Length: 92
Image 1 (cartoon, rainbow, N blue to C red):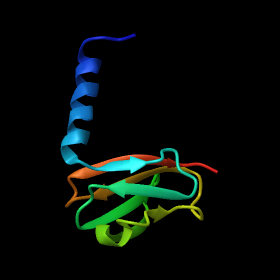
Image 2 (cartoon, rainbow, N blue to C red):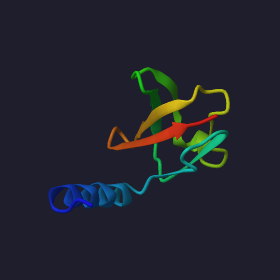
Image 3 (cartoon, helix red, strand yellow):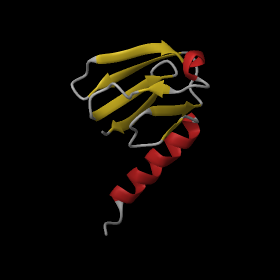
């Protein structure tokens, strides 16, 4: 177990997450990624930085992001004018 600076950084990142008000679940995901707290346009990038999806938060508010045809791997959701960056994993 580590203490000190690493703990403070983790707590700071966790606080930032809650202040942003964006939640993703389930993670890892196989079929549909549910998103709450997202406002306006968003993008999803794969681990290589390629944009795999763009859209408006209103289009996914009730149905989520369907990832069932995406490759397994790590992805990043960018939204709220770039102020929110959330990582998630697609698993088969």
